[in-house]
Image (spheres, rainbow, N blue to C red):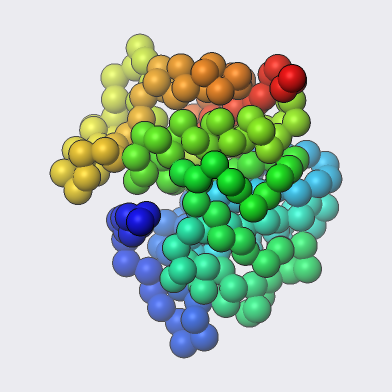
Length: 217
């Protein structure tokens, strides 16, 4: 049985089934500004662990040339995504699919880009390994996997806020925590992917641009 998702904030419920994430409202514009630089000019973007669905609605509305495919493993989150889509979702926002990143069988066989926001640190390390391995299968060589969140970067003093965040996460679950860029790079190499760019984001966050480099045989 899959463990229930950890929640770091209270989601504001609405009468129509939508749930609202304060962090999603805060960071969606700054994330979109960077996504626009790396997402393709057309095609399907698979969003992993879409949460409340607010990012999906915001990004799909701002990127009408792309089809946005939200996904979740949590039934409550899936219901919220459905509600957001019914209430104000644009035509290019697809019906959310049930997807557990830790499984080997994803319901999506191919995508032109994958986006994962604020999920590596609230998942076991096996999540990151599976995400990289399955992204390698789903994406064509050169297509981006864009991962946003807090990351410890080698050669830099960690921000006090990230150290405190890491401690809070590990007290909740020893398997969670802010990941090291060195460890992510190693896992990417094992999955035959590479980190092309590390983009500094506000509030001591990072956006990783990861690409598949070697064609499968």
